[in-house]
Length: 460
Image 1 (cartoon, rainbow, N blue to C red):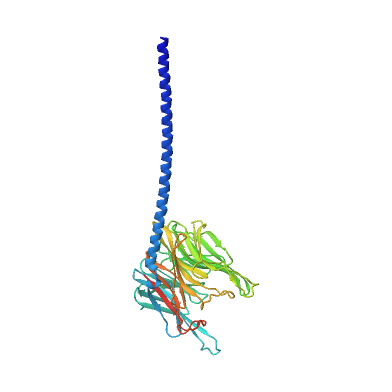
Image 2 (image 1 turned 90 degrees about the vertical axis):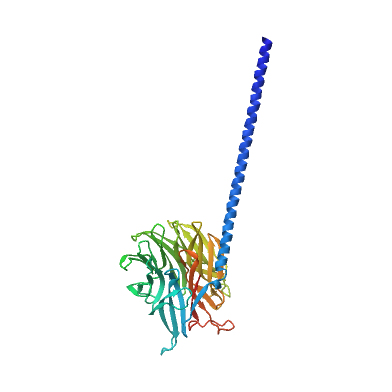
């Protein structure tokens, strides 16, 4: 029995040892399997990340190719050059699509004469609004107003046209509503200036100018009127995704022998006119914002310029270090800056006057900015027109430049706005002006006015 017992115990012990070995092997195998799974998962994550990055690069490359095909040369655009009679300068400031083929255009014609008795120059101006059909350089109809200045135009859902401006540089302000065939439907005037107008979701419209924000209904009845700080000049407005209103503008102080400072302002209002917040933007002593557009997911994007220049007053040549850079800033709905692009590429100085936003994969990724590149005089701070002034267009995918172009072939040129039809970047109009003085030789200064400026409309 004892011998059998020993044998039995040995067998049991062997089984226990074998079970331990098997369990250990299974544990090791499980651990190895987990490690392999983790390694495979990491490989898959890396591959997915690489694939996502490659896909994004591919999309960006395709976008670059798309924009090159569309905007590869701005001369591929069809263009309308509007030249005034002898001695008349023409400039286009803004356009708005009435439908896919027709659009309303505002601008100004000017004539400088020296026919007064005391020999001083006299500037005579006319503001105008015209209707064009794409492909034709002949206006369907034109309305002109002596000593008036149109600043902005928009079109209602029913095809009526709203134009705002000033009866003089200092006002009074006006808004005129026209039918699509040019018939004046009504007009309102008030003390102040009007720089921009935008329609809201209820067919009311918001007007900004000076330090005033004005809301009117579709018949021109005033709903409310609000003011920001004295000295501000509001230049652009928009309704955001939350149905609130936002406006941007600038405040300039000093100059004329005093220290110069310009800072920008952005303010948000409810539909009832309650100010929700107001923010100032001052990165340097000279910051300006000219245009604001709403983002589909909330928030806004604004465009303007930052002057980074420092003047060396002790330098014998009074040289300027730095440049003026175009700037694009995205704000969230609370007025916090979420991103900023500072652009300095084409020429010593750039400024963005207007922007449009187009969507990529359902997101507000692509911003098209227009304005001009130029060289600022190192002493006066004025734009040196007879050295360089070129219409500028830059396309951004977030902070990546997809495309950039300046318009050559003219002594000077400028894009004032960009207008898209149904957010389609392949169907847009660029209004502005060109200066083409063929009689100028050897870099002589421009003979300003006297018929040198011509209105420019470029469209796809």
